[in-house]
Length: 144
Image (cartoon, rainbow, N blue to C red):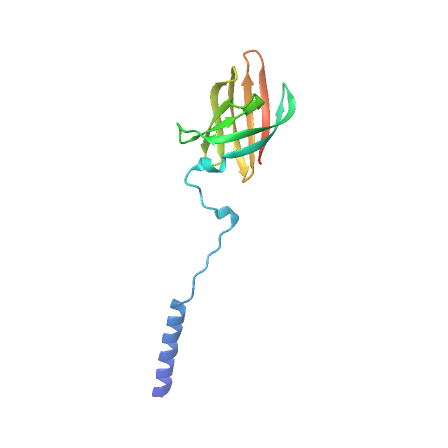
């Protein structure tokens, strides 16, 4: 009987020791990707723009998005509205949201907003007001 009791105690100790050494595994789904230290990092790239303008119609062009060096919440969109390299619109970034606050851009008033809809896509709606006509634009930006 004593041998049986000692055997049970040993088995319990072995079971406890075995549980202590079981490795713990966790998995990461694509939705669990780590958030970058700077939310703007996921926007920085060259993008192909497919734009629909109520005044111009459909057009395709390229923009380049870079981080602002003067505001840690902003990006600069070069060639916005296809007005040429060196012409940069400013946009605020908060998570996946893009806000284009009212600003003078290419001698017009610009404002709009949008959302980063995946790793390689941004949807924007914006308005260009030249003082007499407001051009309403929708655009899909695709990472190059």
